[in-house]
Amino acid sequence: MQREIAIIGTGYVGLTIGACFAYLGHRVICVDKDKNKIQKLKEGIIPIYEPGLTEILEKYQKNIEFTTDLEKSINGSEVIFICVGTPPKEDGSIDLSQFKEVVKDIGKCLNGCKVIVNKSTVPVGTGDWTKKEIKKYYKGDFFIVSNPEFLREGVAIKDFLEPDRVVFGTENEKAKEIMLDIYSSVNAPKLAIDIRSAELIKYASNAFLAVKISFINEIANICERGGGDVEKIAEGIGLDKRIGKGFLKSGIGYGGSCFPKDIDGLIKVADRKKYSFRILKAVTIVNKNQQLNFVRKIKKILKKVNGNTVCVWGLAFKPNTDDVRKSPASEIVRLLQRSGCEIQAYDPIAMENARKELPKKNIKFCKDPFEAAKNADILALATEWPEFSEVDMDKVKKLMRHPYFLDGRNQFEPEEMGKIGFYYEGIGRKKVL
Image (cartoon, rainbow, N blue to C red):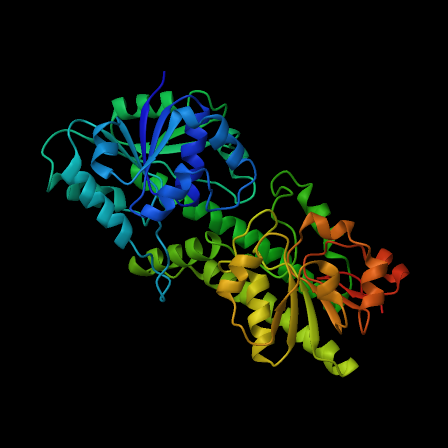
């Protein structure tokens, strides 16, 4: 049946799930205090890049509304999703200020029994706090649910509509039935558990994937010292059903808005419980070292050729997104800038965000891969955009001052680059020199 749903927060998660709930036939009202953002959404201007999102919002606009009126949104809905940001603080702990402000506002606006669903990633125990806080302002019945999101930027629509699982934690049978009904059109296992376990699942999932990424990067580092091809090794161990193929891609490390934040957040959760999460602390070190090692390789080559100009392909933390938050590619650019290198950078989508994020010193943002490669001493591939595989690499080589290619994502095959005439080096793979 159609449900009346309010989405508080129109950031990446809120806008995506709002669009997807509208697609599933629910009546959705998205609310945000940012008047400029809401006005743009009403005009059909989408503030984020996510494949398929614009098309869904256009096709199912009759099912979705945008407003700054929080009280109206809450009063007119039976289910309220909290989708505000929970960014990291400088010490790695989670900043819950936006979340707490929204919870307080919900308590003041409630006009009947509602299901209040937390979609934001929060520390374990936040659901209990939310219940107590709302009771300060509202004395009637309401239900708290934790419904963690597992959306990957670039494929978020598919992840919502065809997920591996739907998880929600609740103490109430009626709330469970409503959540099952909301997601009834989604064909996936649905796991109904306690709130605290649901709160931890998102952290645990991302932490485990970060461990896999860091593990294969450590294997790649051994390959560079002792021989072996990390791509073939990853294929071999990935065929083990106990391990699986996913997230065994070596490179310059993980980034984005979720992995670094969630890993640091889980470490802090453990620290507060007087437990040292040793594996995750090691993972953060390994990940940072991947970027430092990549820069060392670049500087070594520059010294060899007596050059200083680096072409960087890719600035987003992964393909199919314009997100440069905690991007390994952007961090590599910063490290090179501090070393005095001249950077010629190109990214198919993330250029605008990169201009805002990166220091202005010693960097030129280029219109295409060829302009970025012109007169460069080395080409450093930092984000594995599919379009880079279609570039005429012979033309690229001719444009460069020196034909050195450092592939930070193992997107290209060493032998093919060697045939073109590149001095090629990947991560944990055979060098072609």
